[in-house]
Length: 408
Image 1 (cartoon, helix red, strand yellow):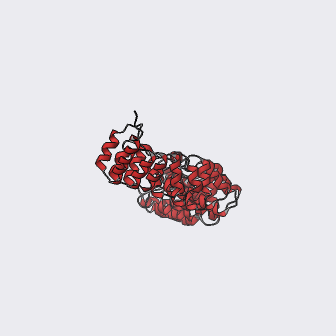
Image 2: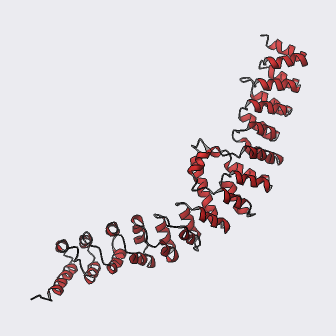
Image 3: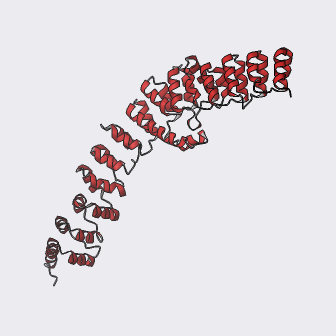
């Protein structure tokens, strides 16, 4: 006949072993159990009440706790044992919610290192700031709605921390711009700016550089929306951190942006990683900055189109640029054709005595009739045949001086 008292007696024996911390006997007992017959809830709770690391390890090496015991275990277990359990079994959704509800941050941190929540929205809606921060340090959210909910929590630093680690979708960026959320906008554009500066230092092609940063960059459509928003704070952030797409550049002229705004943009971004305006927009940039004598900011880097710069920049800016960079042949000609004696002297000084100007510039110098500048130049350099022919024809006295210095 089956003895109905065997099971209660056996349970009492197990409880006795647990209460006596008989680790070796417990280990042997757990190893003898089949996977279908682990401890019942009462026994598991007693095991946890008399927490013996060796005994608990022996148990979880074979079995997962029941859901009610799991809630207790994950809150009281040392980190190493908890991590072992999480690695083996994870946590039920109910236990996950328990950690969030009870604000067990350290346990949640261990879980986040190895697993993802079944319902991150629950965390975003009711989790403490620290619980949210800990989880998002290891895991991105699953969709834009969750990110949007995070954005509207009462602690802006949570979104800032998230956006500085994970990619923010275009849809969320659009919401940020539409809502004129300054703090969030500042976070996303400065994250891009830091990445851009880092990569720009080694970039050889601006187009390819922007392709690698496409997920982080603010799309052209949103750049235009910011520039047309009349929100000075957002506009200033944009101009300080984001290379402008061609569509956004056009807005600068259509809206007659003040030269101070353009100067700000140039100082923070221009030529970084090869960034420049489209050619037709670059000429407009030169003209606007020169009109307010703010083009000194354009003298800190070599220009792709130095001809336009020499044509439109203020004399002070051109003089400074010539002192720092060699001009292309066409730019030398353009400078001489400005007819500014001080700039011509600066150009000749720059190209003397080691270098000579290009032959086209020598011809234009003679055509201009600036005899003192010609004398300054020929003191160090011979001239091309075309320039000499003009010199002999128009200024024979200067030509005699030339041949006295350069008989061959």
